[in-house]
Image (cartoon, rainbow, N blue to C red; front, side):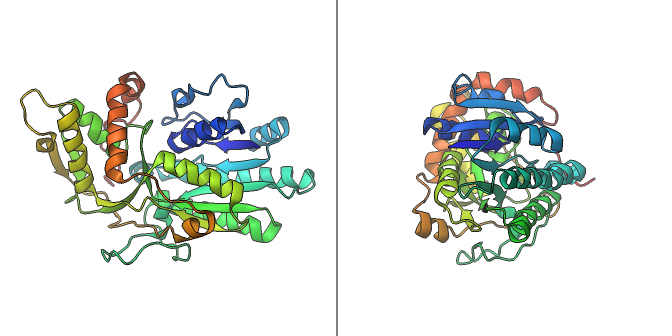
Length: 350
């Protein structure tokens, strides 16, 4: 199977490509190499004859058409997106251009390619999205997002992803394009760009810097190990029902404060501080993010019952693996600290 992956130099996209190549698939990686992209994520497969890289922007329709024509993919996995909520607060325009107009371009290019190829039965357009499109949940643990939860996005980022979800479903209804949609919970793991909570806390701790937690740290997220997510995404495109939406969750709800305290405990064991104190003493509560959703939690019953998938690691196991990876891979993350916006507080709404 030949898969066109957009955003393949990003965190989730690179995990998908590494797994797909290991399973014998051919992959074309289409990536604009914006600030959070990192081709080093794909060093293990870069020389593989079944891997090809195309430096292109999904906002450039002629380039997308060229890539479809040149590589003739069997399937598309569309992951390219601007994805940082804080950055979307400071600069929403880029999110609208990439996440909405870029998805429109991908859909139109895919539709043209699919139609001109005789509408092959096996073609799929898999759109990878987020649980943030559903809005915020109450603290009741019995209440979770399902595939039928109404959309209620609260940030420019989640609004742009909700818009792209609607476009994908509209292209299926109007033009018959064979699509699949997945909405996932918060990803974490190796190769996570150092602007999200887990890598920020880990690297700040190693440098003796404050560990920033928004508000009182009570916001809850469902944490999904990125390699588990990659497994689920390939399973969906291989065996998922066309037109179906699948929610992919880690079944690991933790508050931000609990998460940071767990990371501190791991670092206390693996890399003790010189003065013998705990990394938790570096925890600092900062002004909350504007419109910060209180809780996300996914009910993954559909993908479990229909496709047999469930996460393989607990958040504690996944965090242990992740922290160890950052300790062992300083050559990967250190050059990224100089990139625009990394290490700065963004999204204050000023």
